[in-house]
Length: 439
Image 1 (tube, rainbow, N blue to C red):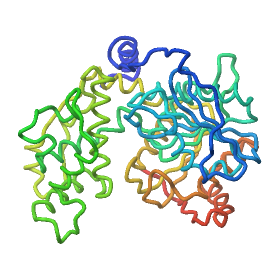
Image 2 (image 1 turned 180 degrees about the horizontal axis):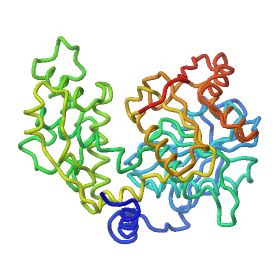
Image 3 (image 1 turned 90 degrees about the vertical axis):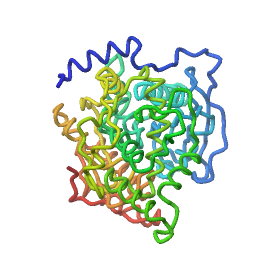
Image 4 (image 1 turned 90 degrees about the horizontal axis):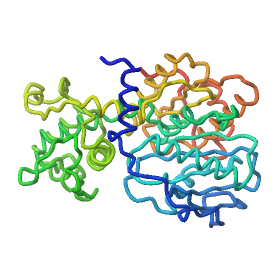
């Protein structure tokens, strides 16, 4: 196995050369739109002032300052990654999802990033650029907290490693909050979707069909090809009867669905979503970022849990990763654990999209870097991903503020106690499990 140093050295060379294309260059200043007044979403507290604009690199952004602002700014990194061309109002969805933060008195800023598609370092740079834009436009706040959700957790964690401290030695951020974060990094976070593509094809034989252009499944799709979510859903429906009541499925559909879910470990409700990422996101990663190279391997994977594991393992499509592609993906998205800021994470135990095992991986990475004193992790009993129970976010903010004020690292009990002070306000429960530790 290559050492970490050799992998990062190789990846750096690839990044500097032709191996991991960002496909964006410095944009014209004509793209810049200074913050302009915008109508706040109805979900925000009365008196909130919103602005929107566009960075020089082309990233659309929104800001929201509550009437009773507490002096702290939250810079938000969104999940995905979204593969569509960014639109001006795209950040509104996340602003509404995390309106609890504005309700708690925090200012909020979030951007689309300069383009759709994969690129953690690119998105981290755009996130930090937004911080500077907001500071320049509205003044430097008392504190700035970096928040990442889902894939944005990877982005925010990378931004914290790269941009926590400015060139003059001053801190750009005071703390980091990561929710439902993809924290195992790029080289470890997507392999199960490559497994899903292979297992799905073994049972369904329709992605691609025998009459269509054949391609290695790790490509997602052939270069330049397109498949809509509706088209993919129709294929899954054809094979598995996904939307049908169990008794309405044919025997073949029931068998296919049971085997796919059992072997790969995804839930029925999220099967199409994971396949979509293993289709369109993989296509973006492979063709636009990795020069057509393969970062995924199932060459030595033994699949288990099907009706006939022997037949599955003998018949499933096999593929071997290109080391240069793995190194480039690791350089872009893997984390070092060298954190310098108080970092608080929250994750649902039964998250069906980004599995809670990502938190265990991140804890090991941080421990290996000798920085565990700066990391506190909280887990809930939910089976959700995009939005957890609202008072839990409020509890995170209260706990982080106390940490920054006193230097006392909070634990899950502290976050739970803080959450309970807001449960009645938001009319939702506190589902934090202080005893749980993922493996």
